[in-house]
Length: 164
Image (cartoon, rainbow, N blue to C red; front, side, top):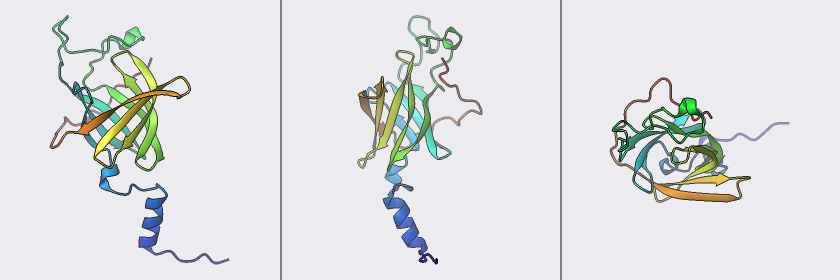
């Protein structure tokens, strides 16, 4: 049986419509994002077929109680409580789960917990970031905005991971 030939343009159109490729560059979440509260910036990068993200800036980088850089002191694992927050990986194992959508885990340094997460690039150029508890039925989220012209430091060879 002979299959019909598909032109390159047709293949691209089919891939885009089925979610294999993003419809536009707006769907690429790579870049630096400001959290909804404006207290952190997260560098989102492509990691293979998925995405990953790490904190590259804090509004308040120094802990007022210690006078030293903020650390992961809410992490339940005592061995990880001295990791700097800046450089901490927070988007973990994010794999494509739909058009302009990735699912995996997010680490919340505010409470030291890791949650099921969904990240969606919106048509208006924002990023919707959700964290879910339990079986994923209870979710909360926020909207991150792209930081124009941001030039974060180059990624290090070894990024921290929120191992518990």
